[in-house]
Amino acid sequence: MALFGTKKTASARPAAPDKKPAKAKADVSAAPASMKDLYAEANQPTGKSKAKSAATPLYPQAYRTIVKPLITEKATNLSSENKYIFVVERTANKIAVAKAIQAIYGVKPLNVNLLNVAGKVVRRGRISGRRKNWRKAIVTLAKGETIKIYEGV
Image (cartoon, rainbow, N blue to C red; front, top):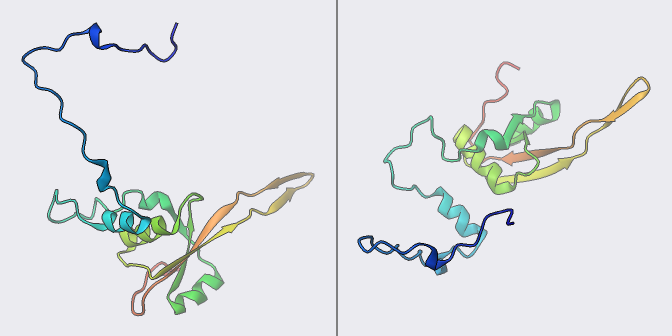
C-alpha cells in the first residue's frame, strides 16, 4: 500500500495517435549567475502592460516586508540625515527591504542596514514573560529625497 501515490508506467495508457508530442523544457543554462543579476532581472518590466497602475506595485510583498515605520526621538533626529527607520519582518533581507521601500514610497534607497533586536523580559506581578524578537531596518536615501512618515506626529 503506497501512501503518496503509485508509480505510473508507460504501458498503462497508450498515447493517442492524433495528439502532438509535448514541447521540450527550456534550456537551464540561461540561469542568472549571481544575486546582482537576480536583482537586475526583478527590476526589468515584463512587457505585459505598458504602464503599471498604482494598485499593482512592482513588488507585491512590499506591505508584508515593511511592518511599520518606527517613530522615536532618535529616528526623528536621523531623518535630518536622510535616514529612516522601519520595523521589518524577521526573514527580510536587504534586497527585499530596498524593493519594498521603492514600491511603497517611490524612492530608491542608497543603503539599507538591518539589525536584529532582542525582545525584553517583562513581568506582570509574579508572572514573567518575554516580548517578541524583531528586526529593524535603517534606510538611507539620496540627498533631496524624503519620506513623509512623520506628518501629524
